Amino acid sequence: MTNQIAKIDFRSEEYFQNIVEDCRAIVVERSFNSRIEIVQGKWEVGQRISVDSDYQKNGKGSGKFIEQLGEEIKLSPSDIYDCIKIYDQYPKLNLLFDKFGKNISWFKIREELLGRRNEKRGTDKVCYRIEGILEAFKKWFEQSKTTVADEAVDEFKKYLIAKRK
Image 1: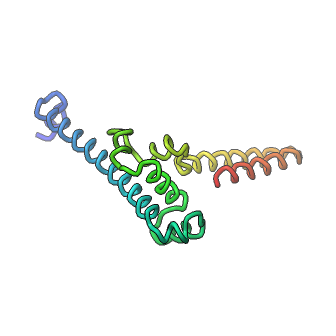
Image 2 (image 1 turned 30 degrees about the vertical axis):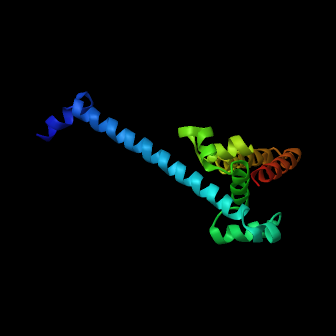
């Protein structure tokens, strides 16, 4: 009996296709809803900070204020600044949703409206791979007794580290 079930291709069955379509719709809709919640939450953080009179008097322009706030609410200072900038550019949330439609995400907003690339998106992996290649390169040149390559590798490493910050 189990061998017969293993040979069936359920994809050709109409009931199976109905389940697939329903599940895809659920996944797409819930994914959209989660992106909406993130965007709305970030916008609300920007709103809360921007309209606060104490922030206007004491904290605006203070990196220390943003840094300490970030520590308390578990957001990076750059993320907090972005929340404020987005609220300042779009004081009505529906305008932000109108601009991006169903294709909205915090990543897209940061990239398109603020000109930011998400620094964490793959950059570290690439840098670590390059550093590994450089280590192998350096070992090879050590065997060849060349000092110029060592200096070049060290300078390039410094450059990579600076780019990650």
